[in-house]
Amino acid sequence: MYKINNLPYEYKAFEPVIDELTMKIHHDKHHQTYCDKLNSTLEKYPELVNRSVEDLLSNLSSLPTTTQTAVRNFGGGYVNHNLFWEILRPAQIENSPSNLLLEKIKQDFGSFIDFKKKFTDQALGLFGSGWVWLVLTQDNKLNIQLTLNQDSPLSLGLKPLLAIDVWEHAYYLKYQNRRSDYLEAIWSLINWSKVEEFYQLASVA
Ligand code: MN
Image (cartoon, rainbow, N blue to C red; front, side, top):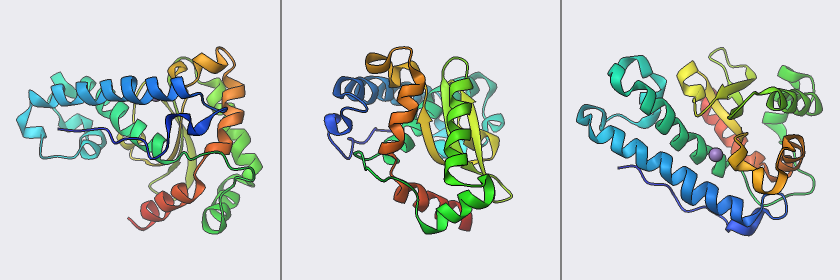
């Protein structure tokens, strides 16, 4: 049985960038529902219970066809949000990656500013609901990847390092249609040391 962790900060910790009610509904209702539906999906397939959800998402085509869509949606929703909560922290004024990851960003995107611009442009261009990711590719390059709905980069053979949720449930109460304001503000919440940790793990794996 999968469970969602309590947030490692208060629901109001991201005010005014993300409001308390949005955090509460997002974590306690949306994320919890993905987790519950993942559990009820797996209940019907005892042979899948011993495999990690990351393994299932990385190998969707190995699953019974009748359960692929449910694992993709609910398993994806479960792990995507786990990562999202981890790579956020209360706002920092000067917030940017350090050393190792910054060098890699410069190498693969030109500069940190270029990276942010490219990431934001992709997020603004995403039609409907989905996620924008910083990923590490199989040939060890950083890249920006969009996924629709709750699709996981794991299903594309990519290692997720940073995720921004661009479903309206992530920002609508405060920002309504102003996705660009949400995207601009959320940079102050990124926990770059956590992203760097994921980068180091992914690059040695
Ligand atoms: Mn979400």
